[in-house]
Image 1 (cartoon, rainbow over the protein chains, first blue to last red):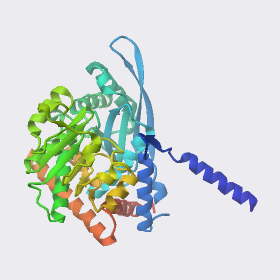
Image 2 (cartoon, rainbow over the protein chains, first blue to last red; image 1 turned 180 degrees about the horizontal axis):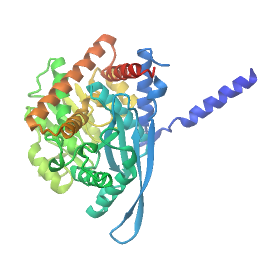
Image 3 (cartoon, rainbow over the protein chains, first blue to last red; image 1 turned 90 degrees about the vertical axis):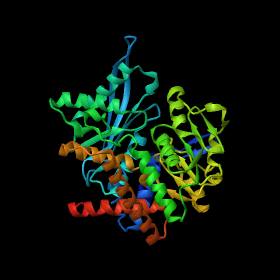
Image 4 (cartoon, one colour; image 1 turned 180 degrees about the vertical axis):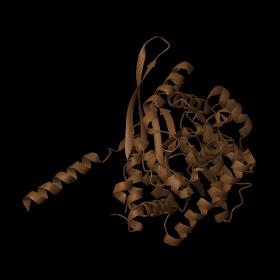
Length: 52
Length: 388
């Protein structure tokens, strides 16, 4: 069980590292375009029940 | 399905050596991303810009897949770019860079594989150099490999104006849905390159008063409306609209907050943000650029009930006429400009209606509806191939 939790944490950390960093310009947080389009795709596939 | 869609199936990173005019060599980094070929060969522009990154071309290639699917065009999404400021290169250096890029891409491009086209800072002339290199490598003419070529090399009538023209068709459609007459409306445009200037020109021709324009060199405002034809000539000479005829200057922030009916962001990404988004007073925002809006900017517009024509629908006129060019090249036919424009009008309006209908059906935003239309069509193709 502890091993499983540790593995989940490692996966979460890997995912975090894969996420593009947000760029800040003149105090405004800009978005990585890849992050935006992936979010939109996730929402669309979820809505169409095609997430898997 | 999300797992298949979320990343391009292939990204090629290349290094292109160029002998500079002073005799030294410089290496330029370039990318080509191919997102998905379930609907057909991948297709998308090549940009020359110092800000090009792997993530950016990956995102842009996914957007291209969405655009093609929304328009019902048999393509997947592709995109390429070279990290370079083309204004710092001589014509000869630029030509060598363009040839070198195609030499590196040759194994993965072609009329049935992946079809590059113009994008930010790339022109029909650059496409001419690229098709020349590809044809030399293949030992035969392969015009369908590159679109956006000069007319004499198999380019299509209407291709140069296609993206801006498509933007205006979608603005007309949005105005119609809102029960508004385009004639007499007011607009501001951010960016005065190919897309911004053509959009401004066509809006002006339809009786819209374009009150303000901002480009990389500055901005101008004239409450009676700007003389767009003259301004295009002026900007071609000076490189910017700034300073034209002593008109009042206009900042980016002022442009977004302008009291107008139509706002057209036609520059780069990340322009409508948590800062500029809440200030927008326009009724219609037509995203002529790719990715001009951040999620915070989008939320602000949504909250204020602004009709947003999302980028993947709004600026799809370019890929549509690129498709027409490819069809003409592969069938050895030539269409007139009128024929191209009429077909483009039909395609854009049909796509707008499909997205609008989805929005009504799902009770979502136009942006979400555009993704739903695209993903649904891609899913149908994946299912037909047995992928899902």
